[in-house]
Length: 134
Picture 1 (cartoon, helix red, strand yellow):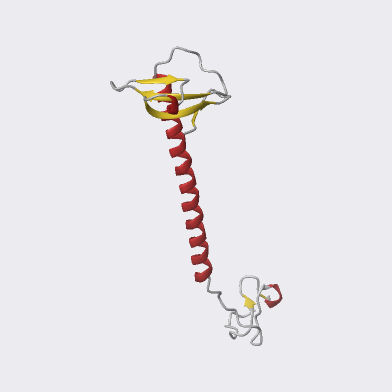
Picture 2: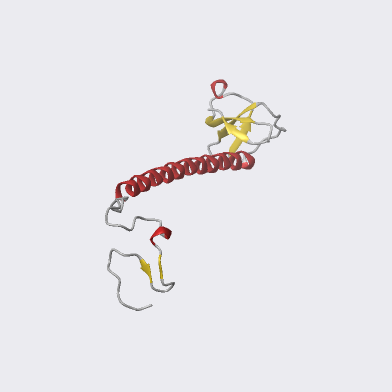
């Protein structure tokens, strides 16, 4: 066959030396529908905004959990450093007070029953973790 150039509207594969319009996944004749590229900018912007919002929300949730965990740790550390001369019972409420010299002590006496400087009231849960009540 000759190597002469075919017209632009003829689909001819020079490598296989065949007319292969029937193999194409798109229209190849003049009357075929126009192929238009879709503008995805709006979709991308919406997706980016949704993702940013989701990540920011999740970050704030994790940050709040972290701050809560740190506060729980600090309360437990404070109570474990405090002076007390009894063994705390699970499920009971105890009260943490501060002496004038800055030393903390744990007591069974409620803040409304004494004149000590109250740090807070705590509950000893089943996992032996102190939870602040008041």
